[in-house]
Length: 389
Image (tube, rainbow, N blue to C red; front, side):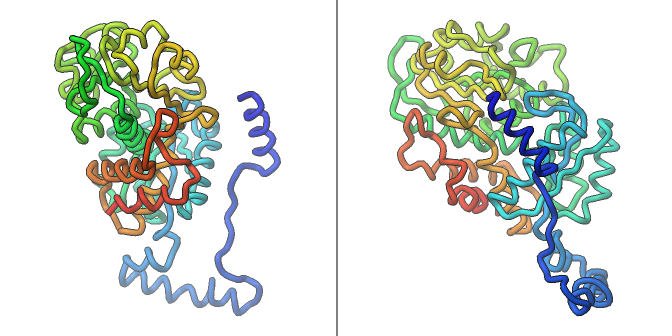
């Protein structure tokens, strides 16, 4: 990891960031200028005045996404502000271009005021065909997304919630396809079925709540979500609106306490929290051969070798240097490719579930060390994009 950090610093300095803008058309003569700029461009403007739909076919709008943050919740770094968040937004933009040929622009807002963020995005929205919200802290991210989805005529997706949820669901589907039983309280083998398995999600921010919501829509019934104060449950007095909403739909047994209490006889651990929070002792409290998704970056909740030593059957992280990388680059390029190509106004949970199913199907015979396709599998973007329609 130290070597990657050093090389990343060198790369960013050498190229002054990761992006540039290039013209699609020739500009080598006055004739070229007369067509691309004045006087010819005036006719394009007049046509769009008469029919705004032409902006999608005659300008960059039809293939553009704004990647927007306020820098308040950058993965693994926290509230580092807009300027320090810019390298991450550049990264998201080049991933959209590389994998889905979407023209994306990094936009970092120098405010963390919810209303100002909403107003600013609305004011710049005419340029873009879709909005990708990034690294905005909870609970503000929920309100910002909901308001923009209602008030804009283009799709808005908070990547930390929804793209992450799609790839986690795909990984979980394929983990359950691996033929290993779970064990109930009587130690009798039972099938790994969505309505039976117990899932513990550690982290109740944007990613944790987004994952829980999608898993519930898919059909999982037995979920417990924890924040820094312990398990969410109906009746807990300190919960804000979004945590209260998800608490009402989960933890029906009203389990209280921390991971030690919640992981007893659990089948799946999904960590979107902090490094080192999961121990071998806690894994041994789970049902035999549990599934461990330790997704904190850059250091996961538990390192894979320790999880395996404790008896984990399937282990996934967010890192590329271990098997089973759960990374939302598998999902958001395809989601936006599909949304732009199909003129989607809303990206619905049903579309996201279909995207997860399509993604999981690319692995014909999943194994404990291969539950997701490669990030570089050319079929990934097409499979995900087919769901967004």
